[in-house]
Length: 250
Ligand code: NAD
Image (cartoon, rainbow, N blue to C red; front, side, top):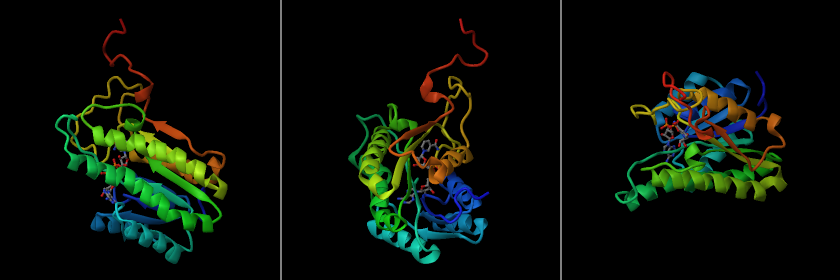
């Protein structure tokens, strides 16, 4: 019940999906939580459902000014900041020959520059707390390539690299930085997409709560010796392909 007691967390993209599950899991384990998102109504509802110790702030991760205000809200409302979860993300599609510069810029700006902005904004408060944990939500598209999502794949590889570099720079302050690489998770982002899970070892999509459990570990002191690392959580997707159920292994 109290794995992150006395800690304050800021979760970007926390209005729904994985971010909402993360915010709720951290809150359930004793953290006070600031949820930042551009979906103001959903974000307020999510914070209200969690009850006291949770607040919503408008946060467009592409805006350093919004980040400054979000970190300020954590410090002013709850007295500091210990955990930053860079979760906000978008996806767009198209084979590279059709993919536009506008598509590229929008996904890189949110997923990669947004994560950079978050880390930059949080550093002073995390230092003030004598350390902390930054968790960057990448993807298995940050581990291997996927067709027709060139910007998303590049952004998620970028988040993986940024994580390593930031971990090296911030270790001296007791700030740990790690990346999480989910496979296909059932959220509004993937709703309506056709995903064949038949070759995945666990033969199903993941749930947001399963990602939240891993983030909780990385946010807590249980992971005190873990930094600069990447955590794949994909039901075995990147391990290799299995024979689909019902087909002969031959
Ligand atoms: P989602 O669309 O349900 O939630 C993403 C949230 O980010 C939304 O609340 C959205 O409003 C917010 N957001 C988007 N742009 C923003 C901005 N500029 N500023 C602030 N907030 C913004 O998606 P999800 O599936 O919960 O994804 C969460 C993270 O997990 C993303 O980074 C995504 O790339 C990553 N991820 C998802 C999956 C999956 O299968 N769902 C797999 C791997 C990685």
